[in-house]
Amino acid sequence: MMLFRDDKPNEVEVWFKEKTGGYTGEAEIISLPQTVEEPWFNSEIREFLQCIQTGQQPDRNFDRALYIQTILDQILESCETGCTIKL
Image (cartoon, one colour):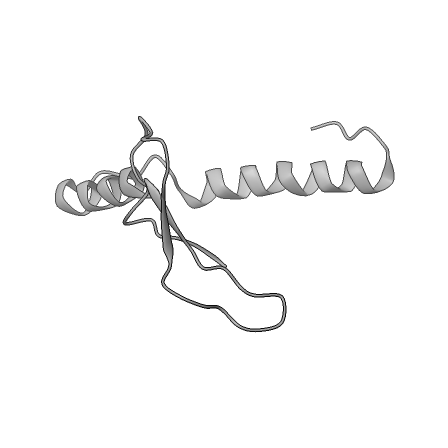
């Protein structure tokens, strides 16, 4: 079993399981290469808090999410039908 925690983005914890039994021993910590990017969702959380403090509208809003979801739905439909769909 492998566990990735977003509060520790540069490591994963791994437990090994015997073929005939359960997990044994302590988790092995495996280091991952350090990334240049921020941990997941930090920029979204920062933007959310800034919007609350300043009253400005977020860059990410429902209209944009709906637009992206529409594109994703059309991609799925195109894959399922094999037809080109004009956006």
